[in-house]
Image (cartoon, rainbow, N blue to C red; front, side, top):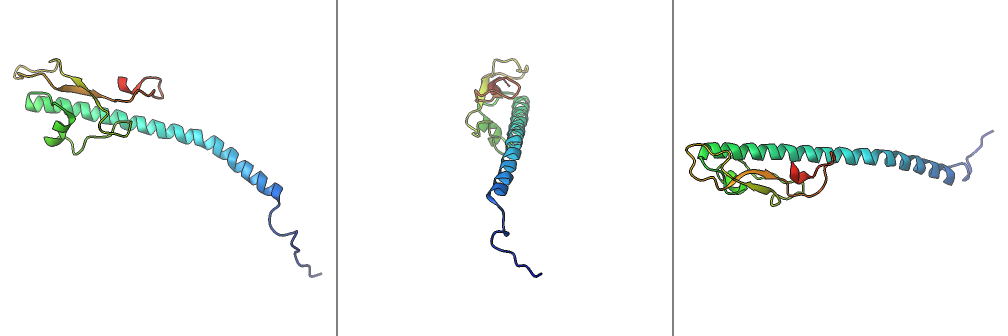
Length: 135
C-alpha cells in the first residue's frame, strides 16, 4: 500500500523537455520581430523629435541673434541646448548641417552664412521606405 517513487517516476522525460523547449522557441520566434519593430519605431520617433527640436532651436537662435549659428555647438554655448542630441547613428557628430542661403534672413540681418537646418547623417532606410537623411 505504501509505495515509494522509484527513480524512473521522478523528474521530466527527454520528450517532455523537448516539447517545452520547442514551445518556448516558437513563442520567441513570434515575439522577436514584434519587439525589433517596436524598437525601430521608437528610435525613429526620437530622431523626428530631435530633428524638430534642433531645427526650431536654429530658427529661434537666428531670430534672436539676427544671424544663423555657425554650428550646433553655438546653440549649446548660447544656452539654447543643454547638449546636442544624438543622431539615429548614436553619435552627435553625424548631423548634416544645411548651409544658410539667406532665405530666413530678416531686414536687420547682415550675414546669412551659417546653418539654417540639420538632417540626419545616416544613409539607412526608415520603416516608411525613405532615407533618414531626407527627413
